[in-house]
Each structure stands twice: as C-alpha cells, then as structure tokens.
Image 1 (spheres, one colour):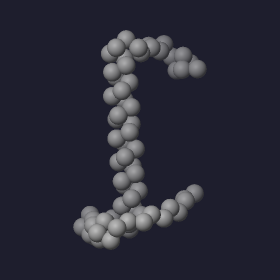
Image 2 (cartoon, one colour):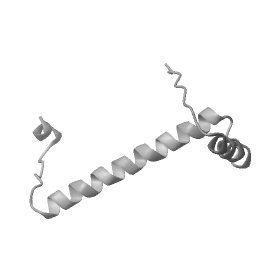
Image 3 (tube, one colour):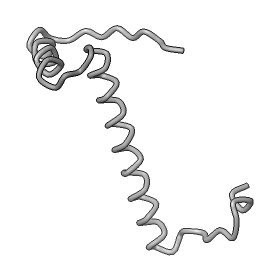
Image 4 (cartoon, helix red, strand yellow):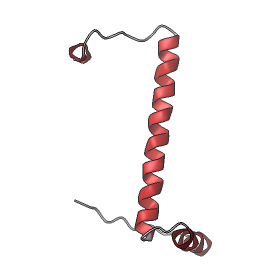
Length: 71
C-alpha cells in the first residue's frame, strides 16, 4: 500500500529535480524521491553498522552462539 506525501520546494529545486528526472531516466519525480529515500536508508544502515563495529572494538559487544541468544 502506498501513501501520498506532498512536499513544497523552492522553484529552483523543483527545476533541478525535473532536470534530474530527465537526465537520469527516472520514470517520475516520485521515483526520484523513492531512490533518495532508499539511499538515505542505506546510509543509515551503514552508520549503524559502523557504530556497532566501534562498540564491539571497545569490548561492549556480545558474541551469540545462536539466534536464540537475541531474545
């Protein structure tokens, strides 16, 4: 199920997005924004993984013997 979200942008940004849609063969502005959100989610995941790696390096991690240890 999809949800419609309306955003307001300055004219210059709107023109930049229209240009990006044409130049990068996006099907629509919606697809452009979906790609931005996917990239943002990927960056968040990488950020969280790096944080976890630092915690493990500090000795704060816990080794699991099985997935049941997550409970």
